[in-house]
Image (cartoon, rainbow, N blue to C red; front, side, top):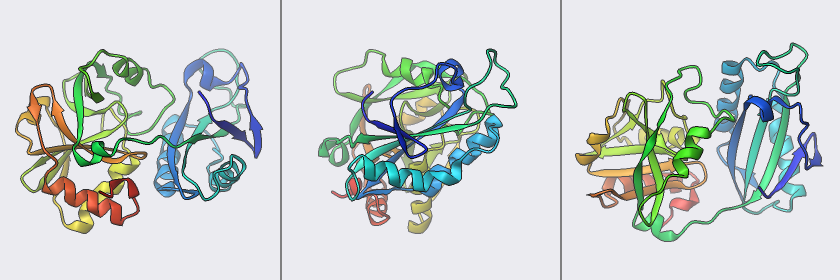
Length: 282
């Protein structure tokens, strides 16, 4: 993995062998779009990071240092005023061997800065192809919604063989409910209303998902977070996915199912563009 990493305003290139993030995935992460040198939707990222610390019982996490630490890392890496991607990794820290964390463990925050990934304009204009993953997401309410360092379910799904041109894989939980993509949240449109999976037992509450629902409120578009079965894709008029880096991609195909980017999708894309998500500009 390329990029430049920083800890306490110092550049680093190693992780201590005793770090619990390495041994157990004991920590959290956030991936932030930086546009014109400014971290986008930072308040939502920090809210989710704080929720994750509460869920994992990480004591006294250095969340307050993130804004200044990000600006230092962005400037030092040469992206002051430019576009890039920032990744925050918050580890519980080093500790003794064994699952139970020591009371002496101190959280460690690291910030990585990477080149921005660019995507084809046709993903936004025409939509992407998705497939249904064979893998399943475990149902664990305590971890649902937050971004822990353990992403093995997504790793396995992303490694599956898929049809040519497939950009994303949609994932179900162990009860067969449609939850999300490997790197995205998913939305179905029925008429003029939007339906998205409820993230209560599995999946991640993406910051762009939050931002989009806020935009839907502003545009007076009806939406609901609910239980969704995969066969509901057959009745959907439009389908799209979101994440913090891409903004919104319409979905044009999943197996034999076909859609076109419809009026609700286009209206939400325009609303997101007006709300600062430049990727949605067509």
